[in-house]
Length: 443
Ligand SMILES: *Cc1c(COP(=O)(O)O)cnc(C)c1O
Image (cartoon, rainbow, N blue to C red; front, side, top):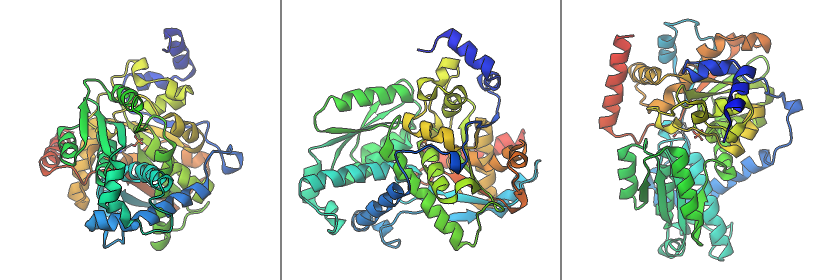
């Protein structure tokens, strides 16, 4: 528990918290951000990122066998990086104007899971399944992993249970991959998780346990129930190294895509990346990976809803995962269900505190307006959470960040990380679109 005195002293030391508590959109620059030469030693590095990619390569034959939609990409799951000039024009109807190029990283289109959770969630389950199979002597690392799509393997994995707590997308990714491998799977869902996500999971064979409380309660109960069983494994979004590692590979892939598209990233050509943030695992993993590759030339920002600034409050106060937005009387109520998180990930946030350049918050109404504008301009559908990075370039341009770091924005490349959308049913898409349309009209 955080005492009232402690809260008061946090606010006195960090006046920005007054605006955060009154739910005003803010932009915060991280005073703890390190240059590469000042960076502490972390427990992971480039070697581990490459090991993640190798594991995905071993599993490629499994994906081709189990998910035929991955055959054209030879069992490799990746999403496009696209320049969005029409959207840039729309955004530039407001000041300040975006300087440099604007790209969208389309993880909404990641195969099978339709969100960035395919990176972290799938990786953690594959890593666990591979370890079990190696230990049992069912496989060696040189074998053809299409064996993982066999009755024998499914029967073996069926002795084990996977548990996970989720607001939706993590549950979907863990549920889909675990059920396919044959695991029993239990998804502990918070009250804000959407009905269609629960329905889809049940259809795929997962057990869905619903809670009336928020994400922290769902995860706590899930952890307790899962760890009480002997043959069970809990994917712990509040403190998972494996999830984090899974996300880092996105950085390696995006670096290749930038190179293929002839985009230079160096001191004179800075790269800015804006990532929607829940517990901070996915944006932290990708930011960490990008730093390993581009060093001081990349500048990573997180975005959270004004009602769920979990990582922001953890970083501003320095209390990290020991503090929640509810401690400040913030309600954690947002339509951005992928970001509806009150407490940050311990593992991720300790790393991010050194790595990220800053954090801004955004109102739900803005997410819906961006969703509608992106469909009209680019014909790309994103779920509300996933649009949050689009205003990043303008938010940062309103601060003295570029000036302070001596950056030329004309030469900049901006990437808004679109984190999810493809699994959203048509009916929900229409509802979101109309909501954004009417908000824009009254704007
Ligand atoms: C989970 C999620 C995020 C944030 O990821 P965290 O690891 O929780 O920070 C962002 N967008 C979408 C769509 C998500 O599902």
